[in-house]
Length: 327
Image (cartoon, rainbow, N blue to C red; front, side, top):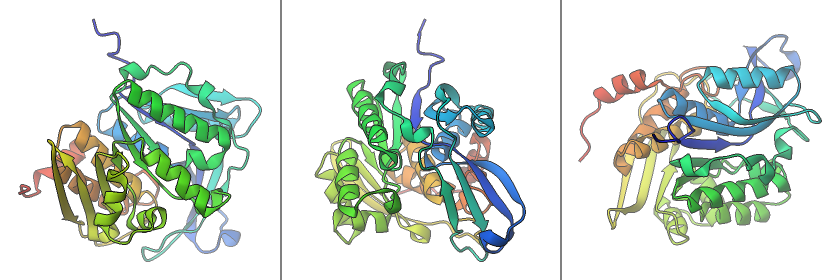
């Protein structure tokens, strides 16, 4: 009997926050009613992978408060294994408030996360993690921006996952306001990306982190530092892939999917990560992975909320059934 059968095959970690989305458009100061949900780039990807049938383990901390209980219940309802989610009696669950933007604009967001329970994560929180059972670890640049101890946890997770033979994906997910300096952000995130197999920056992020301009040059920056493949998000234009497949270098640009009505752009990049990672774990080609990233990213922007548009496996199968064969 395989003792790892029911243990998480995919690991994710970071900060899950209680989210409050304005019910009506307009400035935050004038909004009376908000709809509650959960938010966090890392949880968006974890939920997206769980909806596609992967066993996902979530590592984090929440406060011993009503919002922490709410976050835990929501994550468990989405199918996440929360055996590594710890209650922190001394620090509160992070909160985020989001305006309702119109016309496809980026909504304004306000965070209340300083000193949150998740910002006190450290390597000790991973003491019980069974890395030997994991096929894959997904990480972003947000936890290392929260605190020094979160940065230590991020390094620990990447190193332990690699040591046990799991693949690692890394999305820089830049949050410049959380860093002491741009230089420290670049140095830290590029060092973490060098520990990953699959790196998933946006074009603007890649330019800021590498100092290079073109998708190919940005990809080469990470390939030279040890990544196997780089998937670059180009927004509505699609995605660019470059990497080594079966011992040979390959690259491709995959066009984006047209979206008639963009409702909420938050979470589009997380949807892209869900598509890329799930396809690669399904054994699909990098080109198919980039296309699935574009597909799920397009789904994500058509609904209100950070992760509400992420598809379940049946919906994804329906969407992919109508796609033409790749060359």
